[in-house]
Amino acid sequence: MTIRMTRPGRSGILDWLIQRVTAVIVAAFIVAMLVWLLSTGDVTYAAWKGLFATAWMQSFTLLALLATCVHAWIGMWTVGTDYIQTGNLGKYAETLLFLYQLGCALVLIFYLLWGINILWGN
Amino acid sequence: MQVSVYRYNPEENTESRMQDFNLEIPRGKDLMVLDVLELLKEQDASVTYRRSCREGVCGSDGVNMNGRNGLACITPLSDVVKGDSLVLRPLPGLPVIRDLVVDMGQFYKQYEKIKPYLINDEPPPSQERLQSPEERSKLDGLYECILCACCTTGCPSFWWNPDKFVGPAGLLQAYRFLADSRDTATEERLAALEDPFSVFRCRGIMNCVSVCPKGLNPTRAIGHIRNMLVKRVI
Image (tube, rainbow over all chains, first blue to last red; front, side):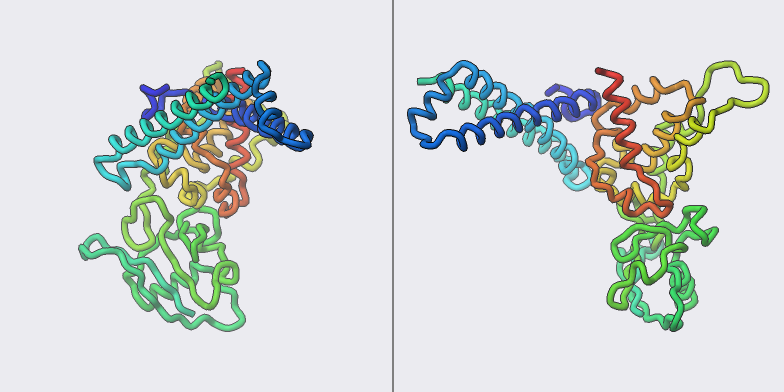
């Protein structure tokens, strides 16, 4: 996916489907969190920690984190290939696009690792 | 009425500019924008634009009128003029040849890409390939496109990726052949559209639907293509 990221060659259908599926996962996570917040009268540190100590919540959160990262990656790639063009940025466009995508990838990897650390770290 | 027209002449070697004209519009008449262009040409014969049928059939006089693409010959002034002023620019997103005339090369290239002709490798019947009325009705709202480019040049996705995104006009025609019961190249046509740019750059902005002078709906056609593509892999 990364090697072919600046060229049309990856599957548009796959990207489109992944965007929809990951959006549903993230939406379900947000709804679940809202339901929990509204149904839990007193959101204390203990209640919060208890929620994220359960295996299902850890798995669901990891799934939502992964979905967010994949969704953002495809979305940012799409935005990048729209606006970073030789037509408006000249010969540096290719390099800028690479740096932009590298930046996006680093932020997303950091976000994912940070999330895993919060879930399973001490 | 004040009419401001985009002027560019490659032979003068100067940058493009807007030129203002003051026009007397006959009272009690709702002129078409093409009539205004004809009046302008009486004042300045060098004002250049394309025109032919003057009744919305040939698709030659697509221009941008007060920020909105359309055919000058069937757009009444009452539809576009705000505050007694009219700004006329060439269709956006394509190179300007002169004044309101654009180079449609990129638009036609995308149209060619979708193979806008019937492909059928079965032996031809003795008379003609018949369709039932139901099969024929699937082409309604698709075959009427006159390729004026108002939709495609109004699409931001085409402005950004004119070489990769087919654009609404091309995709409407792509679906016209995908929906045709006599065409046997469905698989080949879909395979050519599955990359992330050809179809999937459509974000459903729907400028194409709002500007189409023939009242067609390219966004719906693109949705049908997307469904066919998705069904192909699931």
